[in-house]
Picture 1 (cartoon, rainbow, N blue to C red):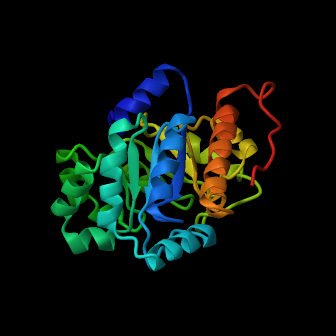
Picture 2 (cartoon, helix red, strand yellow):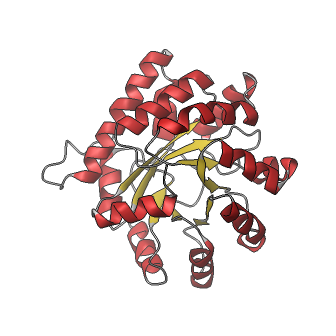
Length: 277
């Protein structure tokens, strides 16, 4: 796999918006997670964000919280997740972005943690509870392992803070589209358009928009507003959890195809831009 930055540059050269699906590792089990990653990679995902289940996921809404709880109840551990990734990543085109809270990193030690995830093929890292003021050590150490730390910009961020985050973020900037946690929303607020404009005025780094995007219409709208990537989490997690593992995988494949089409084709050619949940 190439780096996050290099992959985005290729997409920009092609004038393409990236699709970044999110799933929770270990829900319903790691075997299904591995197959879901392969399916997403084959069906339009440009990057894949993989959540490490955590007992106190402050940034996650009810769908992803429930998935993390189920995974933890089944005994899913980080070491098992990395072992699974080590077997899967060599065959992938889409770089893996690991989503984890900071305590598991501190518990294992920054350098040790980063070495382990790099060996497993991880290329990007999102740590939602890591303040900008404390991110420098992680960012610098991660760079030595070929891992890019992606920082989040909130809708409430000040202009000065937006500039500081944009300067420090690696790979791309993760623009949170709502004030609150992840989850399914009926529509994307218009202010996302203006947040994108504000970010564009201070950086030329790629910008990915996430939190609350669950349908083709929302994905298409965010792309039309100029986002470099559309990040979709709860919709994938919910579909994967419904029915049998085989049914969940089929639903994930279908959603991935629909979203990819929505951000690739023009509005006139798009499929019915409807809520896909």
